[in-house]
Image (cartoon, rainbow, N blue to C red):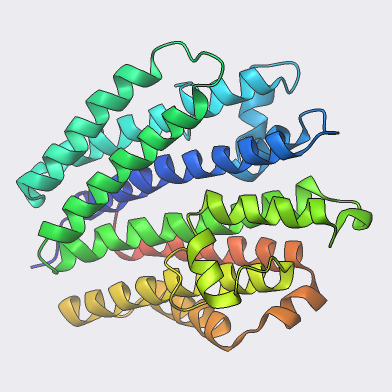
Length: 315
C-alpha cells in the first residue's frame, strides 16, 4: 500500500534538512577556507556564501551590511533563517518525530541525540577560533544520522523517499558550492589559473571532503577543469552531480516498481541524468560554468517540485 502523502513528505524533508545542515556546514567551511587564503578580500567570500545559499534577501532584511560575524551567525544559528544549521536540525527532528513509526530505533536516536547536542552548542556564543570545531561537530552528528539510516533501514518505499531527500539536497548544494568558487569569488579573469586560484580550488575540494579522492584520480595536481569534471561528471564521487542523479533516478525507479506508476518527475530525472552521463567538462567550460550551474539548478528544482506533486506531499 502506498504511503500517505504527508508521511512521504515527512521522510523526504527529514533527510533534506539533515543533508542541508551538513551542506550548510560545508558551504561555511568553503567560505572560511577562502577567507583564510584571501589576503586582499574585504569579506566578499562570505557575501558569496550567502548568495549561493539562497538567503541573501533574508539577510538583507535583517542586517545593513555584510559583516562576516553577522553572516556567520545568520548561517549557523539564526532561527529567522530557515536554512541555518540550527533551523535545519530543528526542522529535521520535527519531521522525524512526525514519521517516528516509519524509522528504526537507531535512526530516531541518532537524529534526536544530534538535535539535542547541536541545539545546545549552537545556542551558545561563538568565540573567535571556534567556528571550525563547531562545523566539524555538525558534520560528525549528521554523518552519524546518515550512518544509522543506511545501516538499519529496510530498502522499501520509506527508504526511497528518504534517499530522494538526501540526494535532491546534495545535488543542489554541490552545484551551489561550485558556484561560490567560480562565479562569485573570482570574477576577474586575471586570477584564473594562478597559484592563488589553485589554492582556492583545493579549499573547495576539502570543503566537500573530496580532496583525498581527487588525488587518487588526478595525482594531486589542482587543475580547475579536472576539479569541475570531478564534482559534476565523476560517477563514483558521492557528492558529484552525476552520482546524485544516479541515486535519484534509482529511487524513482524503485517507487515506479512499488506503485506501478511513472510521473513527470521520472522523465525529468531521466533527462537530467542522461545529460550528466553523456556530458563532458569541456562542453561545460565552453558554455560557461555559471550558465551550466544556473540551468542545472532550475531543472533540478523543477524535478523536486514534481516529486512533491506526484506523490501528494501536501495532501
